[in-house]
Image (tube, rainbow, N blue to C red; front, side):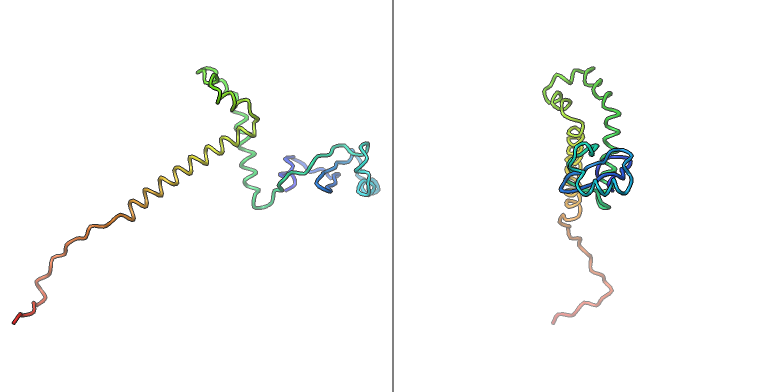
Length: 159
């Protein structure tokens, strides 16, 4: 789960997380004494730290793992096909509109979030339309059908 949280492919063995920051040791410092000294306070020494960065605001767990996979794979697909979209917009002069310029000037993650929001909006409209259609079909007033009386039953005599 740490690989997905930090968006890396291998988890380094030499990092220390404390107080909302992650500190990574210098390379080849994997001996017990080096690691113990790093945890005791060498993580505050900039010469002993290879990199440090703030922790992300979310941590991936078993419930959000598949969402992260879908987001990452969708972002890779979008980045792979982004150049074709830019060429299409240049060919048909769509990039002269300020909305298109603003969209392409935004970062890749922002563009992906905009596309996800657009897809969610379309799904919402489809859901509302389907619900209204089903409600119309299922809940409309039924016209009563007249049933003829059968002649087999005897009629009571009136006196």
